[in-house]
Image 1 (tube, rainbow, N blue to C red):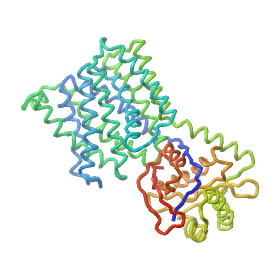
Image 2 (cartoon, one colour):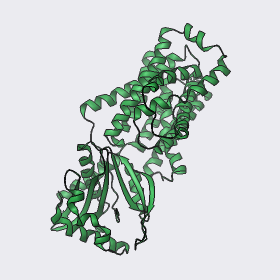
Image 3 (cartoon, one colour):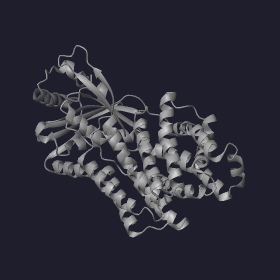
Amino acid sequence: MVRPRGAAGVRGCPGPLKPPDLALALLVVVIWGGAFVATGIGLRSFSPPQLTLLRFLIAAAPVVLLAPPPVSWTALTLVGLTLFTGQFLLQFFGIAAGMPPGLAAITVQTQAFFTMLLAALALGERPSRRQLAGLGVAAAGLVLIGVTVGEDLTLTGFGLTLMSAVSWGLGNILVKRLPRVEMLNLVVWLSLVPLLPALVLSIALDGPAALVPTLAEASWIGVAAALYLGVIATVIAYAIWGKLLREYPAATVTPFALLVPVVAAGASALVLGERFGGVRLAGMALVLLGVAIAVLPVEPARAWYRSRANVAGGMRLTPADRADVPGVIALIGRVYEEYGFVYDPAIEVPDLLDFPAHYAPPRGAFFVLWQGRGIVGSIGVERLDADTAELHRLYLDTALRGRGLGHMLMKEVMAWCQARAISRLVLWSDTRFERAHRLYARMGFQRTGERELPGDINQTREYRFERSV
């Protein structure tokens, strides 16, 4: 029975990428930045639906070798229609209609805000003040970009590219609802979904027999661009990105995506001769600044400094053993009293009374925070299987919350999980702890379930949360 009541709310501090993985992240940045240039080149030989069809026909080729991901066909289709079909058809039509590729790379980054807004509507995830501030800055940037319509930018191209970002954001929300799957398998099977819509559009707009002669007459560089988009920018890049997301917190990996439009704009200027005037450059900078404000993990760094100051001020964090159990039970009792809960340790914390079975190595670990001779904070973690661990007993005394100490406790659990190649952390939290749930959401946890504890004297219902480590 897991009841992290009175949890202080924590944020995991993402550790840096190891040098080989840093190189992989930068490789993906270059690949995806180059994809916008490849799109501009490919559209010189193919129509938008033809290029979409070729990209995903190539990307879907390994489907004969890879098992389908364990998701329903309905879910797979919906994700494929938004994350791949809508995003890239609209993006390709937008570029063909007068959106310069480098500028498109900046504009589609607004997907971060459409994801945020859609999550607020569909999942009840309330955006933070920092995210809203980032949205305002990025919106100002879009206005400046819009002012340049009529130069080499058309209103149609601009609008279609924004719609591409909306489709991407909707796809992100749908992906969040999927179970954990192997990213390569998911990408390859998702690539089947755009084929029929792209084929139908190609027949309707280009003619029923246009694709084969167009492919035969295409320049070698146009064909190379389609191969690049299908093999490198879709299958290889997404597989690498998925690997990084499995091995590191999302807050460590996702900020690298902000480098993609920078690479794309520079490459488009060099290869395609794209030029950016002062107003457009200012708008592009504001869009990227707004996205950075919204997504970069600023708060974990603040929490780290606060927690270090607390430790330096006389607190200490140590691994716990069975001798520390009475102090932890007393801490939990103080928190239960604070919330008016009935507290019987034999019922509420049986794991602590059988401490070695749950928290002795290699199955788990437990950490306690000391102030003087008293335990004032605790956190435990227990391995469930090869990939998953569960967080238990995250507590802090009332007066110590909001000082970064919860972050420090969580950091110990994250480090323990990463050292053991555990990729997912789950927890259960009482439904009445709304403040804690908002903090979990800002940490990157997603709510994935709910349960009732039958016969519980405290009438407990709990939400299940999980996140990648």
